[in-house]
Each structure stands twice: as structure tokens, then as C-alpha cells.
Image (tube, rainbow, N blue to C red; front, side):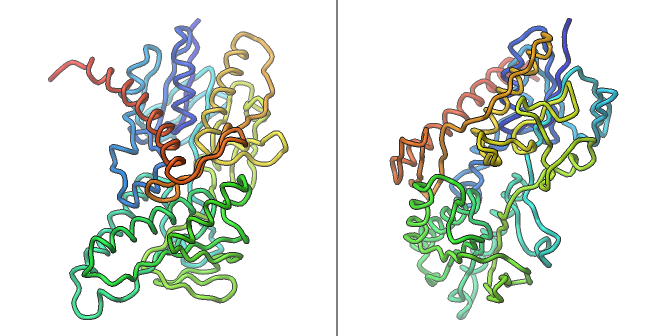
Amino acid sequence: MTKRVIIVGGGYAGVRAMQHLSARPYIQVTLIDKNPFHYLQTEAYALIAQQATLVDVTVDLPALCESYAYAAFVKAEVTGIDFEAKKVVTETRDYYYDYIILAMGSRTFFPDTIPGLHDYAHGVKSLKNAFRFRQQFEQQLFARMNSEGDEECRRFNIVVAGAGLSGVEIAAELADYTGWFMQKNRMLCDSIDVHLIASRDEVLAGMHPYLQAKAKARLQKLGVNVIFGSRVAAVEPNEAVLDSGRRVAFDFMIYAGGIIAPRLVHTLDVERNKKGQIAVHRTLAIVGKEDAFAIGDVADIRAEDGRPLPATANGAEKSAALAVLNLLRCNRSEPMLERSIRLEGYMVALGRFNAAVVIFGRIKFSGFLGYVMKRLITDRYKFLLDSTAYKAFRRRPKG
């Protein structure tokens, strides 16, 4: 008997879950997302720093799902989930399921306790926000180039708040890009500065010491002003006010201070942590639900030592594999397996042609070699998805 599986969310975790399930003729997979594309969030830093285009950071979800015989894509915004009735509610119609996988990812956490943050800072976790920042940043630089008098020599400040993976990558890429921009446009004064605000006395807190050391050295070389041990207390139209009372002027501010679950999760009848992430067993089944799973950033997934699993594409894909394994075992009335998710490695982009990579905790690359390794892994991932989607596109009837 065919089982209906609905996957909510077309990010790294949702796409991988769809691929794992769609090879089985007794499973009919429906992937639902409000966007018709899979956004490669790991490439957000390259997009906002002009090193990538929209084509480089997106994959066509309808074509990708169409390439699998037992998968379908639905472009819709999910407005509710009824676990008792096994029903997903969208703006247009309801979809019923036998099993459901929640893979909605996360969004940038903008604390209401920081006055002005919503009004004057940008988040770049979504493609829309990343592209909006890129456009506005280009417009500001163009206006500066066309200004008269001493306007072109006024200091141009970019503030990045949050020294985790996203914040470090964005700060490094922007500093590298603006340095290149200044060299190419000598009518401007050398006055574009990038400030990175770190809440601790280190960057990439909790990550491998090798990555921390390489990132810190690279940021210093790029001229990024790292303000350690500080948090943003308030944001005014052109200034970030730190908890120490210090004020940092900015023309643009990016906030990368943490993540929170999507708004939909807060309407669901599930247990959640302080970030709104869904409580799951080590099987990745949702606590209190027998036929529902949560994977990727939306789930409160713990490493073997009990610490939260870092929000990475690698972790999202591994959680998808474990959830699918247990969904299939559940369908066969077999006991689900409890497993800890171990990440194979971490990659940190540190500007053009530079990255730091740690694989299996022992193999380490940095500089140009690290960049090559990261590009190989990222490009292979996108190439395989694009080539699969393209085959479906070619099969579509003309006209």
C-alpha cells in the first residue's frame, strides 16, 4: 500500500529527505515550500559580496522533484498542521499524510529586547533579505561614486553583529570585496571599514580551535575591526550602541546573532526549546508523535555530548538520512534506531580564494587550498542537483 509522506521545507534537510525517499515506489513524497527554489544558504556571504549571482545560489525545486518518479512539489505556504487529523493546511487546500517530516529551517533571531534592531539592521538568512542587502549596498556605493565635494571621502562603515559562522563569513567576504572595490575605483578614498561584533573573546565560539585561529588571523589581515566581548544593546538610525556604551557608526548593519524557529512552529502542538526548535528523540521523531519527524535547523538536535548540533548543511543532510531510515523502519513496524549525528567536518569561507576546512577533526586545510576544497564540495552538491533538475526540464513538452 502506498504511503503518503509530506516534507515541509525545501532546504538542505528537506531536499535530502526527498531524495532518500523518492526511490521507493511504495512512497509518494510531496515536498511543500512557499518558494520554488532551494536556497544555498552556505553561499549567502558570496551573494551579498557580489561573488555569486542568484543562479549560483538557487536550485529549481519543481524541476528537481519532477525528476523523481515518486515525488511532487507544491508551491504553497503552510499555515497549520493538524497532527491528529494528519493534515497539512495551506492557503489554498489541505494535504493529508501518513508520515510527515518538518524541515522548515530557521530564521535570524531579532530580539525584541534590542530597541531599533528590527528597524535598522538586516538579516541575510533568507534569499530575499540577502539580495535586498546586496542591492542597497550597491546603490550606496554608486551614490558615493557620484557624490561631489568631500562626500566621497566620508568613512563608509559596515557593522556585522555576531561572530558565529555566518557573521565571520560575511565580514570576511565583505572586507575582501570592499578592498578589491577600492583598488578598482580610485576616485573613492580608502574609507570602507568592516566591524565585527563578537559577544565572546573569540570568533566561531564552540568550533574547532584550528578554525578559530585561522579565522581570527584572516580577519585581522583583511582589516576587519573585531570588537570582542560586546553585545548590541540598541540600534539607532546610523549607530549601533554596545552594552559597554560604545557607539559604532554604520551605513549598513547585518545582524547574525543567532537563529530561531520559523513562526509556524510556534503555532504547532509540539514541545519546543527556548529557540522554538522542536523537541525530538534521538530517532528524530517528534516528542509525543509517532508519525512525525523534525530535521535540520528546526529541530532541537543534540550531539553525543548533549550540546546542540551546530546549524550546518552537513548536519541537516545527516539528520535527513536518519529520519528517513527511521520513517521506513516505522512503516515496516520495526523499532526505530537511536543514533547521534556526527559531523564529518566544518568549512569556513574567509574571503575570495580563502577558506579554512577541518575534516574528521584531523585533516586541515586553509588559505587557497581550503578554498579549493570548499569549492569542490559546494560545487559538486549544486552540480548534482542542477543536472538532475535539468533532465526533468528537458523532458517537459514544448510550447
